[in-house]
Length: 86
Image (cartoon, rainbow, N blue to C red):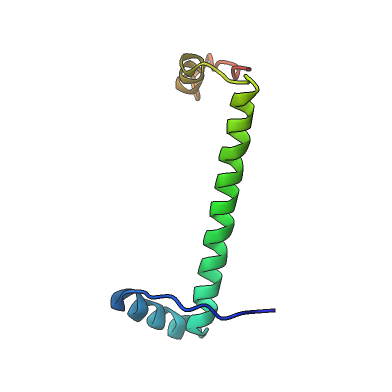
């Protein structure tokens, strides 16, 4: 089931959307809906991961910044370090 949503965009973005829709042989509405869905999914995922990370911190599960930095700086080197554990 679909529903209608009205949004205001600047003229340049609208012109670019129209040109893209023409080239893609899709409607502006289709492209806008796809873009909004992709944005919502990416933001949902990011906020879920941030929330999960904060919950881990609240439980006291964390890695010291210095330990993480040393590990990251070792990437790609002969003596790459093991990932630090909480």
